[in-house]
Amino acid sequence: MVFFMGNSRMNMGHEAAEWMYSAPASYPEPRVIRPNQYYAQIFQEILSGPASKQRAVAQYSHHSRALSRRYSSVSDTLQRISEVETRHIQLALKVVRLLEGNALGQIASPGQREYPIYRGKDLCDRLAADLHMERLIINACKAVQAIVEDPFVLLLVERIMQDDEAHVATLSRLVRETCLHHAEAARENI
Image 1 (tube, rainbow, N blue to C red):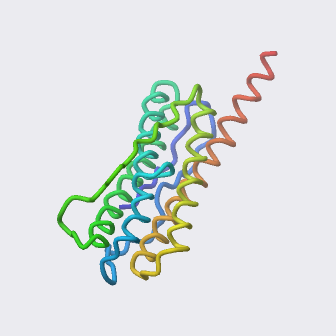
Image 2 (cartoon, rainbow, N blue to C red):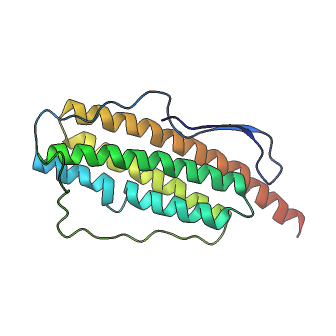
C-alpha cells in the first residue's frame, strides 16, 4: 500500500507540493527463521512501548482531528501517515506472533503499559511533537536492528524504517513551511 498525495494546496497559501507517506518498495512477507520469545519481547516495543507505532497512530489521529477545520491539508497528511503506521502495526503483529510461535493466537502482553499521547497546543507544537515521535520510532527500530539477528525480521524492520524516514522528511517539510509562515505572520502583526 503506497500513499502519495498529489499536488494539493495547504490552507495557508503555500505552493503546491508533493507529500510522501510511504516508500515505493513493497513490504516483505512477515517471516521468521524460528520462534524466539526474546526477539518477540524486543519487537513488542515497536508496537506498544513509549516510542511505539500504537502511540504514534493515536497521536497523529488526534492531531489530524484537532487540525482538520483550519488546516485540512496538514490534517490529511497526518491521517495518511497514521494509515501507513497502522499497516506497520499489522505487519509487526504478525512478526510477534511468529516469534512467539503463536501465528494465529493472541499476543502475550504481561504488564503492558499505556503511554499517553501529546495533545499539543497549536499547529507548530503538534507538528514538532509528531516529528519527534517519528524520530523516536526510528531509534526504537535501530535498537531492534542492533539486537535481533533474524534476517527476515531485519528485512521488515528496514522496510518499515524507510517509511518512517519518509515521514520524517514530510513532517520536517511541514514544520519548515507552516511554522516559518506562522512566525513571519506573527512578526508582521507586531
